[in-house]
Length: 254
Image 1 (cartoon, helix red, strand yellow):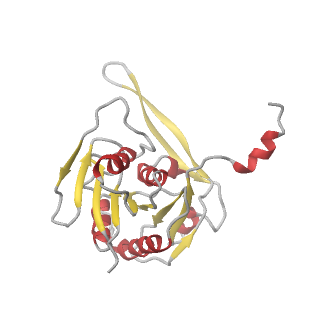
Image 2: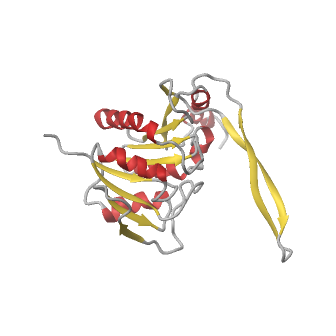
Image 3: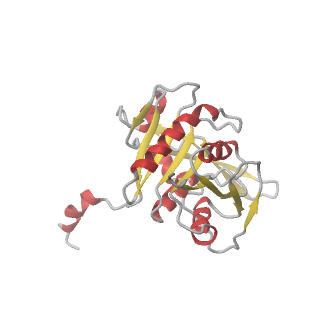
């Protein structure tokens, strides 16, 4: 009998969020699960790590499942680092992050704590997947995602991922899906505005607002897939080198 894979589970919405509880339940069907996740929401933290504050990490019991769980005061990236360096006796066979409450498609991948945890696992040489649902509700319907999550995870365990590549999987808000589409990241961005206010003590403060603008009309993007009720799967690399510009840059008088 093949040995069950060791699976690390984390997220950025906090260890008690319904999204991660759903993901844990699916992973328990596949392997031996260790959860290391933030003790409170860490959305939008990107790849931040804790360097000027103390880090805490304590074993807890959230439900009666077979998984082993730890809550951490750190960021999602911290959680992966702690798991690999301090908690796990060996490198996990897979790291899954999510299920995020809200999508992480297009440019959102660089702000996402969910995807940064997956990327950190990839840096450590661990196959990794980030899962997100285009529904910000705490009570979103994660149940319908289970068979698709299992399908993606089993494929990664069977086929592996190239060094330096992790998967960004986004689900549209739906009860049924047209299928899975392998996509590229859409060219889109946030147009930010700051709502300037003054508190009762006369101190100026700001609330970040804005709108998401998709400039990409391609039908091979994650944004197109989600808008048309497909699950998007984007292979993401954390080598940020603009390889196509190296030759041109070498022609400069530097």
